[in-house]
Each structure stands twice: as structure tokens, then as C-alpha cells.
Image 1 (cartoon, rainbow, N blue to C red):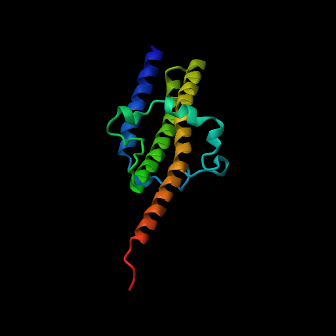
Image 2 (cartoon, rainbow, N blue to C red):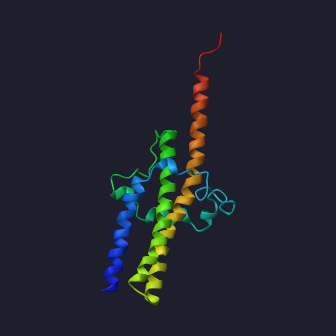
Image 3 (cartoon, helix red, strand yellow):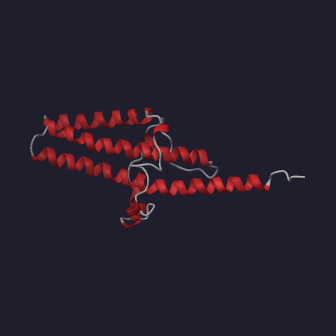
Length: 165
């Protein structure tokens, strides 16, 4: 019975997390501020290459493919800097939600007040950490891409500007 309660608890917090994440105002998230900014030890996402994140990140489930109300995580060939900016905000929201899921995993202990509960908490946290790492890996790359797109757009605008007579 405790196992069933734990599964239901995890399912409920997962579903609620989706709706909370979708309802959070994106203006509250800033990729250049703590905790979403890159820390020096991350070296703008290069740290995650050491753990081979590029090989396994696409093998994990992507909720934006299942839930149509989510912003797609793919960048099209005609993407604008505004779309990249929205995706950067989404990485902040996703990271935040996965951190909260880790914190709420402690609730499993209320159903299993022994070593099994502790093991299940670690399993649940372990299942969320890769998604946090993916957000932290992707965000610096998206920021660099956005900056390049803005510079390219400014260059084009400047090149096509009317000459001053």
C-alpha cells in the first residue's frame, strides 16, 4: 500500500509541476542571475561535455513532445532571437521545476518511513538531476546563439540603412 501511495504522490506532484511551470510568469526568470547563471566551475556548459551529455540528453523524455501546451524545444532554421529568448526562459523554468520536484521528493518518506523511503527519494532525485543538468548545459549555448543572432540582425540593419546625405 505504501508503494501505491508513493507512486500516486510522485504522479500528482509531477502533474502539478507541469501546470505550475506553465503558469509561472517568465519575466520572473533571468538567465544572468542566481541560480540560473553559469557558475565559473561550469565553464559556460563545457563541464557537461565531460559527462557526455550530448550523447544521452536526447534519449531522455521531452515533455514538450507530449504536452502540446509547452514551448517546443527545437529551434527551426528561421528562428528569431525572440524565440531563442523564450527558449532560454523555458530552460530556467524547467530547471526550477526539477529542483522543486527534488525538494518535494522528501514527501515520499511520509509513506515509507524507513530505508526504502530514503532509497526511493534518492531514486526520484536521481531521475530529476539529469534534466537539471540538461538545462544548465543548453542555456549557455542558447545565450551565445541569441547574441550571435542579435549581432547578425544589427549588422544587416546597419548595412541596409539609408546613407546619410
